[in-house]
Image (tube, rainbow, N blue to C red; front, side, top):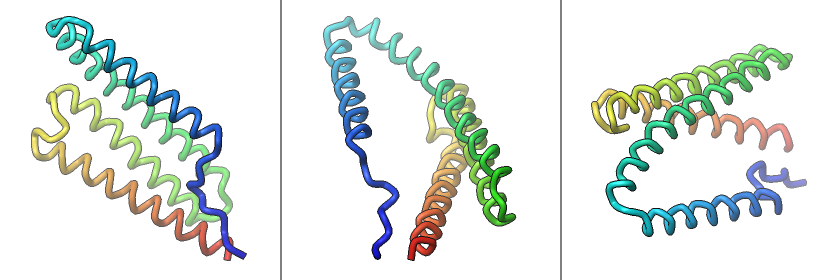
Length: 137
């Protein structure tokens, strides 16, 4: 028996992603029809507000993982969820710092901070896939 792949897209997910793509395409068309000075100010505002929204979003993910960790029976599963929560908090904080510095790649330590968080996410996801695969075999 083969395990079901955990990243299988449902029809609902495809619909939501298609709507998001269309909304982004509409935004690009709208920006092209606006004035360039207005675009620069709008993009700066979107950049700042978007990073703050991202920070809140990562914080909500962290909250979800920390709550889920207390529902787990295994100490190892609890710790994995708590570590994932800390990585999400750190990534959210890096977005707040990014607003202050103006770029995710400058200063160099912010780039390393974000890159280490991304590596942490990759490791956590790989660990999840590995444990999910072995659990279903």
